[in-house]
Image (cartoon, rainbow, N blue to C red; front, side):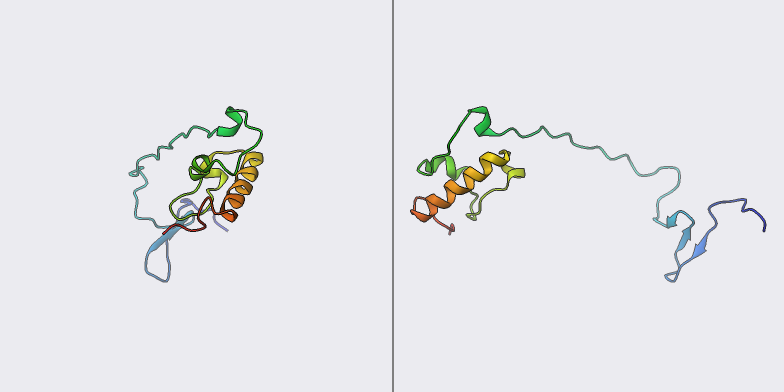
Amino acid sequence: MEPKENSQENFSNSAGRTTSDRGPYTGKSAAGATPQKRFLVRRRKVCKFCQEKTDYIDYKDVRLLQQFIPERGKILPRRLSGTCQRHQIMLAEAIKRARHIAFIPYTMD
């Protein structure tokens, strides 16, 4: 068996496009015509309650709870609000209590 001189032998697939040993043809030149991707470095979100050293999130503090509820009325997840797990659980519980007592509506119009 003879060794391949060119490791990128071209083949035709069913769509008529040329493919190589390294994958399908993408339409980009091998000279690197695509610019390099730049990654945005985001700052790590810090828990607001840990910074203030809050031990208890009061369900009667409607202004504080409204910050974690968007227009739709759902509770913001940890990855968006930046709260730690302990305070997110306390926050969700406080929001649910405030809804039950009608301090906060369940849904927004």
